[in-house]
Image (cartoon, rainbow, N blue to C red):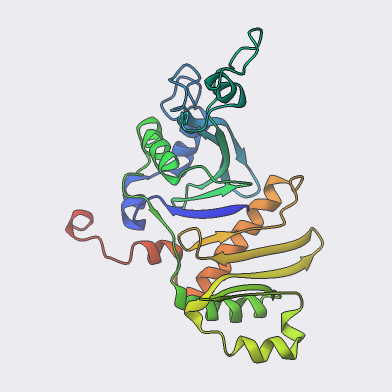
Length: 284
């Protein structure tokens, strides 16, 4: 399922102090090349390669768009068919055992240099967040933008009720809920706002039993679905995204998700990730 992670690259005060000119950082990012630390190194050891492999500017959105890829180590515990046959002496002599290939995963990175926020969108299974953070650290060496204290935005369970209220006001309707009631799983899908039987059951389902809640809205560009799920460390999901959707429109949807979450939180995601104040090192 397509997933979204919002990463606040640094405390707002730290970011504004270090990034005096967003245009300078943007130019350095657009100048990244295969020899840069944050670029994927095809000559590196297989199973450990990761990094950016394409980068451009989205002019209308004023953001840097980068394509990211990472691969996992070869798992010897999952041999190929030929290897299993060979172990049982059943592989014909003229058949070779193929070399194992490490699996690779892609993600789209959207950088708002003015705010110091990176949006990580994975169209399928997401790369390990650790690999993204390692590339961010390399980006800091390449461009000078602070990333060492970056934090992933993760919402709290108590916010779900508020998100539902905000989503309804913004034209969304809840369309799917999955709850785990120990010995019984409940899945509700459809026009939940206008189903009286579901409304009666909804009031009986406690907040801590639900696993996934999703919302949907129709627009000229098609159906927009987003969800909150516990399965991915309090993550955000974006099911039903058309692969042919323009990158610019995808980014607009990502920003809309942030807008909904911030209205529910009552604060900026950066403030939510970095609630503490920066003291004397930024004051004189």
